[in-house]
Length: 416
Image (tube, rainbow, N blue to C red; front, top):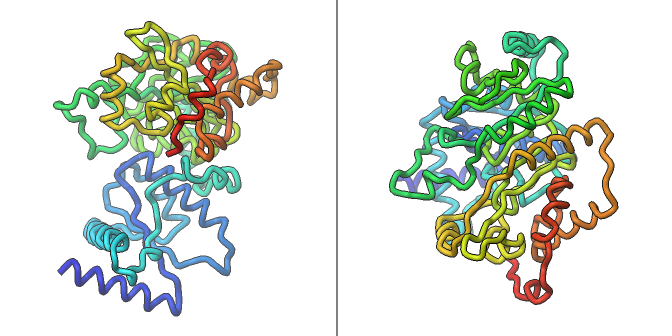
């Protein structure tokens, strides 16, 4: 029966194309990073298309998104249908048609399905720079958001920073559960410790800013008695009437976001908030926009008692934005452990970001060369050759030895 429905749907979409190009998009509504990042990428891409070439797009979502506010804002910019039954049915149809399109069924029309599987990261950098944010708040929502800030203790008009550290309790989707039989699941290399952010937070407060620790939940409270450092994720969020709205509003209006690889950062990124990324891992986890900064976790060789060069980790497959279980096992078996950024490294990145935003940052003579050396650790035509933004300058200065590459190594690298 499903095959018949699939074939009928395919024929119908092809037939209608004579009159109008209809495209169907299935929103990844149960993942925070995807519903925000992937959908904003789609909306920005569509905004670049000339009016004469625009298609009639229909977006589908289930009825229980991970964040209702984001879905509400998407619905203002697109034709949106909310139905669990229709979403699940069309998901099965799409999956079947895409499988057939890889085979001998030349008549399968895959162009009628919008690709909402990615945010353009490592695929297309420029769209994020060419078009501004597509989601926006109403005047009523702005009024509500300002009241939330005041309830948190932040006076009207005061600037603040949002910070986030991924921990054991974090999940980008409520449908995801850590596998108790998988040691790499309960020792997630992407996790880090919010305590290492505190020196940076306290320094930012000294500069006259407020700091909000964001996220929909947190394993432990932050260890600070500073009243201008607000533990929203662990405590204050639970006291709000509409925390999902607050999640979006707070991150959309901060001066910059200080965080790691968790998908929650997209709640800032989709509004073009500058991003200061720390503890990024593996090596292709970089900034997304021209004004972003990032620093990486490093790799300690327990046997040789030294940090691995970045290029050595490229040779081990750490040059993309994922480390699959087989890669993690190979690295672990070799005696290589992934090391979080230190408090000092995080502090220096926060200082650089604030200096850049206030136009007081001054590069040292060798900084540009160090940025180039980092790009050179990746093979020709690798998307990280063209990433926007910068690696933290002080981080590169202090780890210049990890950028050194032997010519014979460059000749053996395999471009993925």
